[in-house]
Image (cartoon, rainbow, N blue to C red):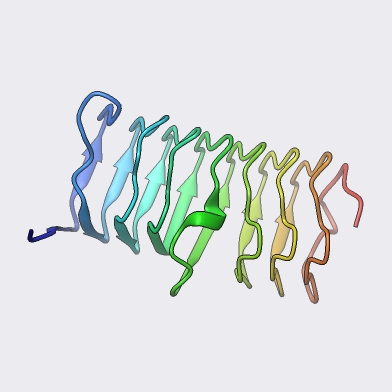
Length: 161
C-alpha cells in the first residue's frame, strides 16, 4: 500500500473523528480548528507542521512522528507522547492544555512550553536538557529521574523538582 503524501497543504475545520485521517506524510502542512479527539493517529509522519486551535485530547499517537512540529492553542489532554516515534522527535507547545499527558522516557531537549497547563503531566525519566517552561502551570507534574540541566523554570509555577 502506498502512503499518501501531502505538502504545504492547509486543513481547516476538519473533524477527524468523523472523517478518517489519511495515513502518510504531512510535510509543511497547517491544521487549523481540527478535531483529532479520541482517534487513532498512529503511523503518521508530521514534518514541519503547525497545529492551531486543534483538539488532540486522548488521541492515540503510537509510532506517529512529530518532526519540528508546533502546537498553538491546542487541547491535548491525556496524550501519550511516549508512544510516538522518537526518531528526530521535536515539537513546541504554546498556549496548550496538556494535562494528564505523558512524555515518559522521551529525549526531547530544547523543547519549548510557553503558557501551557501541564497539570499532572508525566516527565518521568525524560531528557529535557535546555528546555523552556515559560509561564507554565506544573501542578502535580512528575519529574522523577528527569534530566533538566540548563532548563528554564523561572516563570513556571506550582511545581516540585
